[in-house]
Image 1 (spheres, one colour):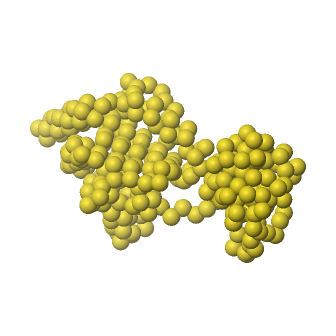
Image 2 (cartoon, helix red, strand yellow):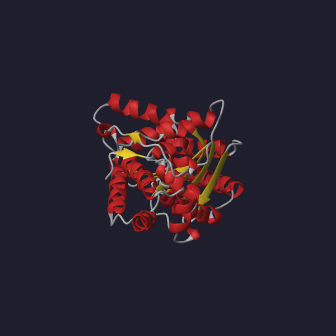
Image 3 (cartoon, rainbow, N blue to C red):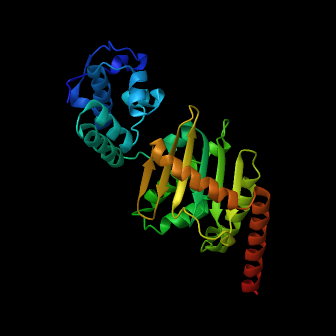
Length: 296
């Protein structure tokens, strides 16, 4: 592998790319992959346009790979190895960068949501964090057996703080798909559940919120865990998938796109926002009627 990079001039498509020294101590696997791509093109004496013709990938796509803006696909790495005659060097670097992305520590969704212009979410087993009341959030968090009351209070406060994105001066557009299973799994405390349903109904009528119930009658679908899609002003999208014990941030467009498609297909089969509010009101009436019978 090279000790220098042609990264500085890769955007121009010129053959005489200026080589730049690299600080190897702080170089990530992704940066190493990008710099090697730029260096190999420079050594081959190819412009981006010429390279695009050889490997059948768009010039703009190759440019983003060389700048580290995208990791790209394994197929692209394989094609570039073939063009440059580098064996499987670029494929190996691609795998290193991919593994590095999976191992990267995740700092939470709040910083991402703070910069988002739109958030789309699917909730499979509990009310989404952005729609929870304080009492519901506290009851749910207690099931994880927090070490102390102080820790529980901090977790509840952090969860409610995220909801500022729905109510602040520049609210994010928020769409939630809520599985019917969420609405059938009530809170243990009847008053907590009453307040939570009322909060969902009220929030669903805010101008920047679209709430869809996914009824059991929708049948099987492809999303089997909680999913959040976060859209940014520059057009890029990241996804976050969450199971009972772990979560995973998905950043590469090639990996995000199938999740977006699955979400859109599920949204198309969900109830409309108007029908969803009707569903929620019926659930609230059913719940209060049951509580009146129990109280007799």
